[in-house]
Length: 364
Image (cartoon, rainbow, N blue to C red; front, side, top):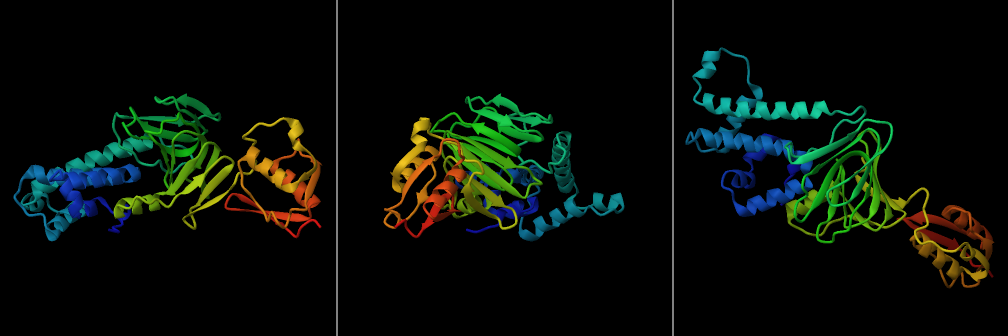
């Protein structure tokens, strides 16, 4: 099934048979589908709530009317259009009480949402990924010029950057930890394989079991970025996760990141681009003497770099078997090290899919 639910308005949800079976009939299969879908599409919560209120109001009136496409369309038109006319003409409509009830519910819901949203609008940030608007959620907003750090109930530490905000449930679900971010934050996640941690933004979602990573998702930024410091994370576009939910296919088309790797979601191309971070850090400490090489086979040098930076180095071992390195690489950054190695071995390098690719004609 490939229904574009993310493009639905509340009246489209109210027309959807599977949605109505969930709301009106409390069908277990439909309930499972929509609960799973909502978990991956929290920004659609408002339209879902409005659609549920719409159907509940219809049920409450108990008019006995069969809600076919034409009937629902008519009522929706009444609610959305609400043209100015003589009060008595509408009063006499057979749907007056029905429409009035729905309007009351919708007006209340929209009023609460508008108040909640505008009370906490951050300068420069257009929107926050929508989450359920109830007392079971906490929100942190950083309006200062300094980063702020706080600890979640599971022991995970969040560093929230200026002009950013984060929302999360209290407590977390039994099998899931998830937060909703607008802006930039650094996460140090407490490991719990039985309870994955998700960070949702408007365009991407990041899943992790236990690691530290940065998410930069300001609304006005060109790209959304995730950078890993330790551990491993999986990053998915919201669109790809939606396809998984709609097709009941558990195969997710995500990008796996390890230390010193990052991914950027291009809003223009709507795709994930994986690369090496701008300034890779050593992830395995080594004595300074190990950075000094004396006629060392190049294979050993590359193996050493892979170990301390966690980044794959791809090269033609046969072609470079006669290449040796004599150099002190104690102080240089990773890219300065690579520049020097390539200069000595008459090679070049490029970065492809967060890997270093060495091009060499050999050292004979």
